[in-house]
Image 1 (cartoon, rainbow, N blue to C red):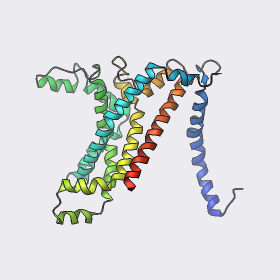
Image 2: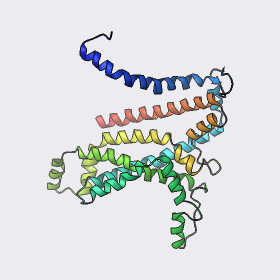
Image 3: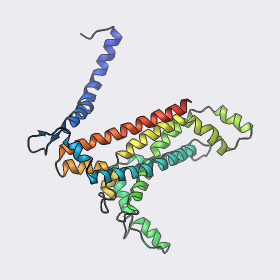
Image 4: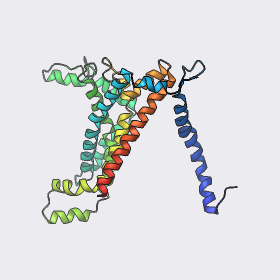
Length: 290
């Protein structure tokens, strides 16, 4: 029998189904992956315990470092732009424009599509010979660009696709934060002669700082886990210049069947994301409280 009063028993009883699913699909895989990282296992044969050898090999693997660097490039490339564009969209949909309802739907519309659909669409748009972007360049009498096969443009092209696809999510979060600001604050500032952009700078931005911290942490976590759009659009090319860490983990585990080594890399990525997130929350949260 579950101990405690009736409310406690009811709460635990209602929580048990969720806890069972959470343990089965979150906790167990998490611990199982950590366990596998200490073994040499190719799925087909019996796993053999090798201790920390997978982690030792990892730190001397050039492909691991290059994939991690490409992931960092993507994070640094997309995070600021997604926050800025999402915030500007939020300003547009919370303003006084009669089209704000339409803008909100248009801005959020790309986010409802799956990663595969978005990536395939933009791979077609950026196709060298008959893609829409290069057709526009030809109309402007400019040379076509190899968006996805040129080392200088490939990662930027994936970043642009990600911006178009996911900026609407940040817009929703920023929009919710802006709508929580009392209108009286803006009205008082307007009476004092504060312009719109001065209000944005001195009122809106400070008062949505908690939302900014949330968006920043969520965005960095999402960008560190980038995989789908890279895999569909470039396959990690050209010459491995867009191969991100999650793709390398996937290929190591499911292409070369090095499950233990793949699991070890997964946990290093997990630690990196956790450390970055905790550091951001600590530093930015402290600054906000100050």
